[in-house]
Image (cartoon, rainbow, N blue to C red):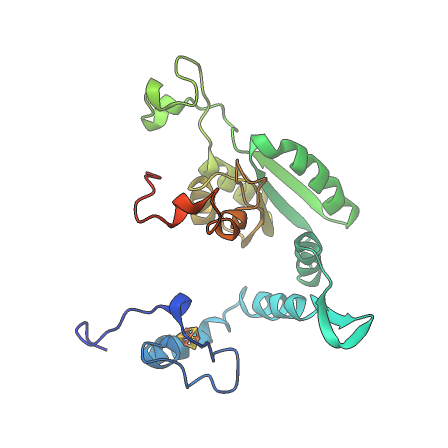
Length: 232
Ligand code: SF4
């Protein structure tokens, strides 16, 4: 499709998603199922690649096993697995033996609870803290006034080293625990093994960032819906 006729893809504004049904070709005019049909076709084959095919299959099986009949209403479905259980199930189904945990120093307590759970499930776990290396923030151009507390020594978060340490340890699957926005992105860029996210950091909302959306129509967080909320 040429650039002039290309329409912006806006699935999040879809008036009635049909892609989750057998009527998947009946979406709106800008539905990527139709206007990006070549991408859909090409990427289907990417699921056949070594290292992807079995992972995609097992991830889908874990998804399917996340639901079961509601005991008191067997005709309806209930969710039955936590995210933690799903991570363990997927890693077991894939036959992984060695896992990597990249955690934020602010969530070391959570990492400290998580790791024995993984070990009790038979995994060898390599864990790396975000501040590994003790590299000063000045090394990446941070000025005194850009630190959390100016005038003090501050160690930069080091997601690239976290990823490379896990790469060299040969971890087969990595789990992120609370890396900061952006530091998580760098970890994902440099990690060799596939990586999932267990905890997403939200310093205000008890690591539940979706709460900002749920509260965005309330008086407390209405500022989030303003055109410019000055969150720069
Ligand atoms: S893929 Fe098509 S049907 Fe599905 S949400 Fe996007 S626009 Fe709607």
